[in-house]
Image 1 (tube, rainbow, N blue to C red):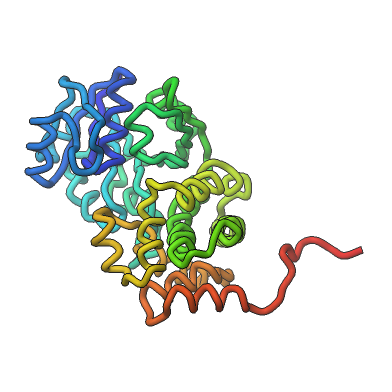
Image 2 (cartoon, rainbow, N blue to C red):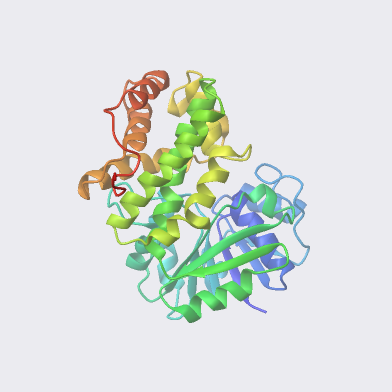
Length: 336
């Protein structure tokens, strides 16, 4: 049995707490929001973000970050991507050498263009940092519906240790040494899901949804491989797998926000309506900047960014994508 601290009481942190507790581990959830912790203590259920998922009576909840960290073998950081650095800075005084931090947030830090595990490693150099990612909506994980994920780490023994801790008969876990590929896939799929949602909001149908998913993984792979990621990762669960579920699922907050934008809402209005952090909005600018840095073409991501942060309408962006210069689908294939 492992002693585990969940740093963040959102839907994903709560679902993973449920999973790990069911796996026989001792789990404590931390949140900076006192009202949230009071609700969890009283109801053993997150009534706002994960209703219907009952948490065990032996699970603990706290607003004391020191208490949530000290004595824990594993820490799971499940806070929104924009606050990962600030939370890591708050965690640093209490983390000791050898503690494992598993990041489950998905995003790229806009100001530095760093992946989130790199941010945590920079702020807490004594920790052993890993990532858990894949097609995994909290609403399904919290109900015990079959799910598969991937754990990435620099060392095989750390990945395999975490694999054993998270894995169950309803939660299958693979391992992967390609952390950069996993994180780029996890971050950029949210931007493509915004595009898929915009297409749904415009009433475009299934044909363009399939095109956005297919051409989206091309853009993700191009950039990820330029940054050192591996093609196999983008063809796997944290690449095409996570992209499919985020573009198609009713649970996807990025798709829901995109639908609202496609119907005429601004990005701010859409995020307020969704009532959850829409990670793709925060990753879009960073992705465009990374594309320029690595000289990689990202037409879908660039159009999404123009809609989010410029004056462009979703319908205009769709038209511009359709009327781009004619090209071959795959330039590596040769004509006879």
